[in-house]
Image (cartoon, rainbow, N blue to C red; front, side, top):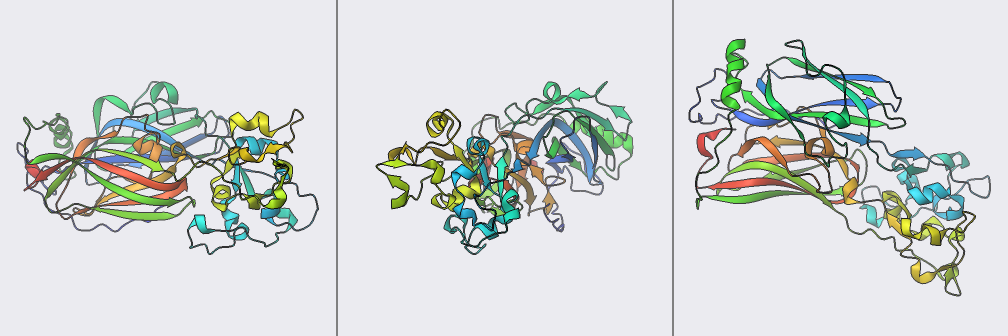
Length: 461
C-alpha cells in the first residue's frame, strides 16, 4: 500500500457566489472525491467478504456514480523439467522443457526471483539486464517461472448499506454485470439515478459474495462524487439541506472568452514493471492563472511488442531453427520479465501434430513467432492524487486504475469529475503510483481549461 502523506494546512478560498458561509470550513468549498472499498478475493465461490467506508468528518459526501475493477493476481505456479535432476541455470532452460500450455498462454520470470535469474544491478533499468550464469537448486524449478493467466471477467453479488440511516440500496444482493457492467472497464461508470448524500462520520457497509472460481486478487468498488466541506459542525437537518444546493448543475461559460482556453496538464511516469514499486510525479500549475480540471484520461505507451531472438550460429542449421533446443538466454531479458508467448496465428506453425515444438522453423520467421504480454490494455496500478495548493487528498485510499479511471485501452469515455477541481496558480498535482503490471511510459492527462489572469470564478474547490 502507498504510504500516507501528512496533511498540510488548508488554504482559505474566496466565498462562492450565491453560497452562504459554512462554519468550520472554507466557504463554498466543494471538491471532487472518491471513496473506495477493497476486498481480498480468494477464488472460492460462495465466500463472503465485506469492507466499510468511513466518511470523514470534513463534510458531507455526495455520491453520483459507482464503478469497480479487479487487480488480479495473474501469476500461477509453473514447473519446468530440466533433463538432469541437478542444479540448473534458468537461462539454459530450453523451450522443450517448458509446458506447451505455458508457451501458448504465456509465462514470465517470477518477479520475486529476478535478482537470481538476471545478473545486473537491481537499480539498473530492466532493458539493461542480462541473463545470469548462477546455478539454482533443483527445487526452484517450480518457483522461478510463472504462467500468466489471461485476464477474465469476474462474477460476484453485491449489497450496500448506509449505516447512518440503516437503509439498503437494493432489495437483495445484485449481480455485478446487471448492476455495474463489465469488470474490464469498457462500460461507462454507472450513474446513480439520484445523487445521495452521506453525512460526516457515517459509514457505508459493502458485502461481496464471490461467484468466480480461481480468480484471486483485490477487488475495488469506488463511489464517485464530491465533498461538501465545512458541514461537519452543522446540525443534521442543515447538513442534509446543503445537498440540494450543492447538487445543482454547474453553469458553463455563457460565451467564448479569450481568458478561458482549453488546456491539458500531463503527468508522464515511467513504469518499470516491478510489482509494488512506488513512483511519484508532480504536475506544476503555472502562474498564468488557475486551472479547472473537468476530466481525467490515461494510457500506456509500450516500446515494442515483438520478441527479437538473439540467435547464434549453432542455432541455425540450413536456414532452419529447432525450437526444442532454443534456450531462454536467446530471448531478451526484458521480454522474459514482461512475459511472452507464441503468437496465436503461429501456433500451428510452431507445433507439430503431436503437440511438439517444430524443429524446422525458417530462420526468417524466428522474430515473428513470439510476442510480449506487455500490452497497453493490461497495465495495472494503484494511484492517488494530491492537491498541494490545499493539502488535500482526492480519494480515501489508493485506487486501482480500472476501478477509478476506466479501461486502459480507451474504450471507456474519459472520467468526468462530478465537480470540476480548481487548482490555484503555482500549486501542483502530486501523482503517486504503485505498480502492479505493465512496463512503458504512462501518460495521465488532466483535462480542463485555464483561467488566464485570475482565479476561477467564485473560488470553489
